[in-house]
Amino acid sequence: MQWATQRRYSPCPQPQLMGLKPIRLIHYFFLFLSFFGVSMCEVFVVGDEDGWNSGTNFATWSQSHNFTKGDFLVFNYAKNVHNVYEVIEETYRSCEAKNGVLGEYDSGNDKIELKEARNYWFICNVAGHCLGGMRFGIVVKESNSSTHLPLNPIDQSPPPNTNHASICCGRFPMWWTFFICILSFNVLFY
Image (tube, rainbow, N blue to C red; front, side, top):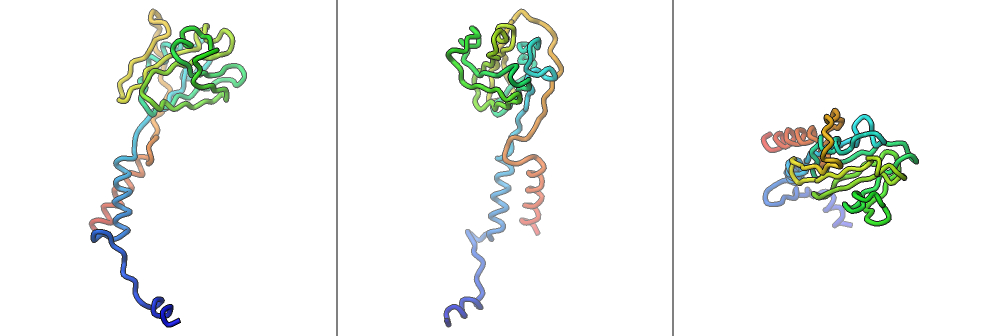
């Protein structure tokens, strides 16, 4: 009983690590994350305004964009009319999806992250759609430069208007980084 009374009324020293108060350690941690946790990516709507539909020139569309690791492709289409298959190159070229399918999507609003720097191949597996032009291949790079794989290298039609938006795909949006920097400045110098 006497121990509990003494413990309750005795002042507790503030814990410190290497001479820093815990609140400053928290701010240093968030400051560190703000500089290394932010990365920009792009979200590309496949086919721009036309979406993932027959009649769109996806070779030209894919050539008009630079794809980077971490970007997203959004396939907008009528559900039960089209689908999206991520495939290997041989399946892409033959349009036969019996083998070589890496992913199947059929929601009508598929968002696919380009997680690796590599070649990606996409087709619509509805009968006749792939052979009719609903396919494209891209090369995703680590940096902001990219080379695209054309469906038909002879096709020279003008590229469509871009329809994509930059978003923050990192841990913190840019305004959060700015806020953390201001907060850290106040904690460190006041």
